[in-house]
Amino acid sequence: MARARSWIFPLPLRVINKAFRAPVDNGLFTQGIVEREVFEDPRTREMLIATGMSLVELGPIQMLTVPGELLPELAVGGYDDSRINAPRAPLVDPNNRNPPKLDQAPEGPYIKDRMPGLYPWLQDERSDGPGQSHGHAMADCRPHRSP
Image 1 (tube, rainbow, N blue to C red):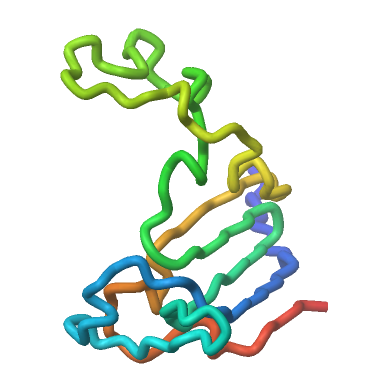
Image 2: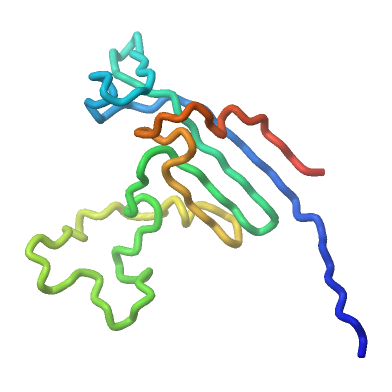
């Protein structure tokens, strides 16, 4: 009997990091309750925090990290009942006393629809996610491209 061979092949790897400042909507940041440096935009007087996003591509896998807690309506959509993997389950429970207003849901394309990778993956609360207080961030890494 022939012995099975296991083939390991290199997958292309690409990492892109983008640092930016985002508006602060949570008063806990500006009151000093959350240990996070807050910046004031000198032009608009808007309060901002430093954060970022990272895109990691490994072969057909594409992973995007986003700061904070990503709203599902921006990430994957599905308000037309197209993304429910339980065919007999209703999109909205008929007994819901406060049903969502689906007619007010944003239209696509959604973030996941805009990711061209074969296997798109969204990850919120990146390592420097607002509300977290540890001091490292992927934005501190240098971009890397495999040959």
